[in-house]
Every structure is written in C-alpha cells, then in structure tokens.
Image (cartoon, rainbow, N blue to C red; front, side, top):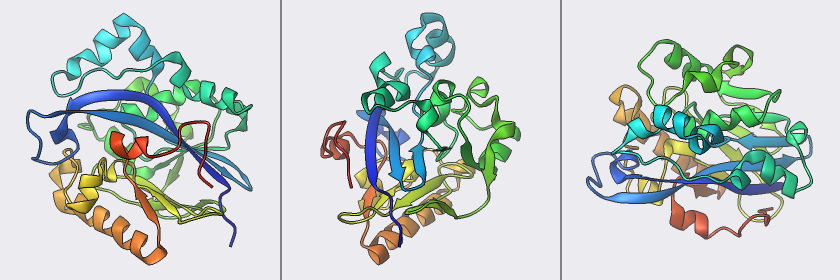
Length: 260
C-alpha cells in the first residue's frame, strides 16, 4: 500500500489560555501555554497542509489585534507569532513555495487553524460541509468571516476519504460540527493520527475528557470521537498526536527535521 513519505510539525504560534478551553470543566483558573500547529505532509502525489495557523496580520497590526484578538480576554490571550512562523517561511526553508502545496486540509474553521489561508492564495482547500453549514447558520464562535471569504471555492467533504496515498480523512465531530482528523501512514515506524482539536492534550485521550468547547454542548459526540480515534490507533498500531499539548510537541525533533 502506498504511504506518505514525510511529515513535518510546524509551530506557527503559541497561545496562553485557561485550561478549561482544552479540558471540559477541568482547569478553572489554571492557564497553560499551548502550541498552534500546522503539519506539512509529503506524499508521492503532492503535498498537504493540515491546518494553516493564524492570520499573522491580526497579531502584528495593533489595530487588528485590538479588534479581533483582545476581546477574547481573559479566557484567551492573543497568540504570540513571529513572521518566521508563517507557513510560507517554513516552506522557503525547505526550498518550497506556496505553489508546491496541492491541498490545504482544514480540520475545522477556528481562527488558529484557518487564519493562515491568507498566506496561501490559490491553494485547493478541503473542509467538511458541516463546518460551512454551521458557520452559515450563525452562532459559530472563534471563526472570523474575513478569513474564509473564498469558502464558496472550498472542496466540501461529507465523509471519510483518501486525501492522498497514505493520508486518510477521519471524521471526528464534537469540538465543532464537522471536525476532521488525519490518519497518516509513513515508511518507517507507526502510523500517525493527527487528532486536531478532537484532542488538544494527552489528557483528553488518557482521561477521555471532552474539549472545553463542544458544538451545541454535545459532549457525548466529542467523547465518541475521542474513543473512535483511540480505537483506530489500537487497531492500526498508530500514534495519537494531540494538537495543543506543548510537552508532547517538544518531544518531536525540531524543524526542519521530519518524521518518516
């Protein structure tokens, strides 16, 4: 069976927030430092980005920061991000450009996952149809409309499918209406499951605790997705990679090293 060839975790920013954001009803008053990650996946048929981080302009421009990010206090502090953490800068360090990205696969539409689309004009974007329907229906917090103005051109997905050889989309709703994770088979070692925000922290997986924010407060749906990902990991001998766990991220070899 064809497999992906290489996987790079990309640290696009960090953000300090109250732990209850990641662990439902657990961690009141405790603030944690979390990585905001994207992942570059190389396959025999092209390159995929899983998530794209924040819109750097909203962090670097004081007026935009005041408009979009400061109102999130005290639950969230504004992300900390440098120009060198933008996706194109990482690509440049690998001798690549935005033109070398074949698919941007968005796990969901929150600003820390979709905001960087502004740095990737013209890329094919995949997202679950339920994400766009949820946004269109109103009440979907954490999404900035100006970041998804091209959503009419997104490739809307409705189920699980092979994104590329060795890369499979896994539906994992609960945190959001149409959240998706990725199952990645690599040449060496165990497959990797990028949980996305279905599991922010290792704790979400080990203790089977839902994310702090669940779509329409459906904690049961979020827990079902956690258990689904754990069952997939057991059956396939795969590693589960939580998405906002700084200690877990620090165990990975620093960029430009890759997993293969």
